[in-house]
Image (cartoon, rainbow, N blue to C red):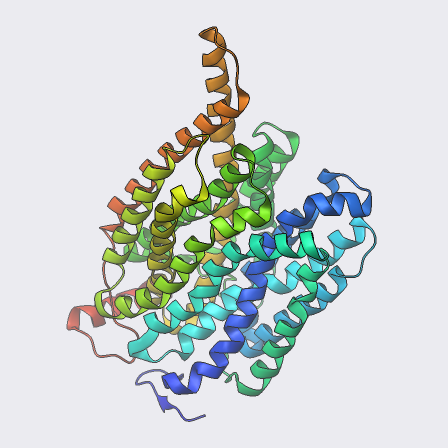
Length: 501
């Protein structure tokens, strides 16, 4: 594979033509991992019947998968630097594929939970390693466009997941949710082994043993505690999970800031541009995941649509996000991240405003426009923000920073669901209380619809706050290898100085 050296960098620069086939392998791997993050939710009711078990037990097929991913994400950057990104990516895909085969075989709920944990251990490393991999391979002047292409499965897979899994569960078997991963995984492994170029390993001077223990514990416990918050913030599981997670996170931060070779490079937070960018990303992630979670719940719980019909209704959102992703990548290379974030959040704000007017007569056709707006806003922001954060990082530390951002996104996603469930439950209860106080007949379904409307209304302010903060984002330096203005070169030197200071 022909390449040219990037000035001042030991990594080669590849052409767009040379990375197209490797990109297929990476996109395929990311797609099947993200798809399985949402597909299982639809199958739980069927599994309760097939295994003659209960929902709390089978809920661990979702929770165990999430915790397994959260525990290995902090390790992914160190593993890539130590053993090579290609090796870790292929091993992770192989473990995920083997886990998928195992998940299709059990006849008991307990074994399915075990196999889902194995699947999650493989899947946890795929996305952060893939993001760092693609960034390193992208031509300097096409980083945004290539990252935008990789972003398509990240947003499209969660949207198409309920449609596909609902169809498989209803007309075939839940086991096909896992069987369809096998050909995808095999194709990914064959192409990846033959065509993925090896990127330079980085010498790891020492092993951060305390960090390797505290990091996975902190992020797994936080994700668990926050997700349990959806069932009650005062429950024992929530309190224990959050207490262990917060204590482990504090200890982890102290250890990492003192370590000579930290597991996660937290000193990047000394860069104001990076810190502002990641706070904006958290707000965006909260809003995006909240919108992805809340509207399907409204359609199913308040309007009574089935999983398959709900997935079909939401399809315009997935298509809009998929179409906007590559366009946003091209725009990022030309104008930077600021106005993509502001415009994207403006679209989502408009969509949320329309969501806040849903009622008991709302049909799928009534929300097509806001769904398209929401999907376009998502596609406009997600990968440009990730690319912006990576661009603030010295190239030799890219894999460590993608581990940071992905680990925090796991927690933020759980926080979004738990918080929105809490708000929705509270608002619904308040509406029931108002009906009782007014002496009117209590209609729980109507109270729930008003609860959804109130929750969507609150999310509007979150999106507006993110858009305002997005105005502080600076375009920053151009990708390594591209000629930039003197100020941009100084910014690169400043960032490197922060990292090594």
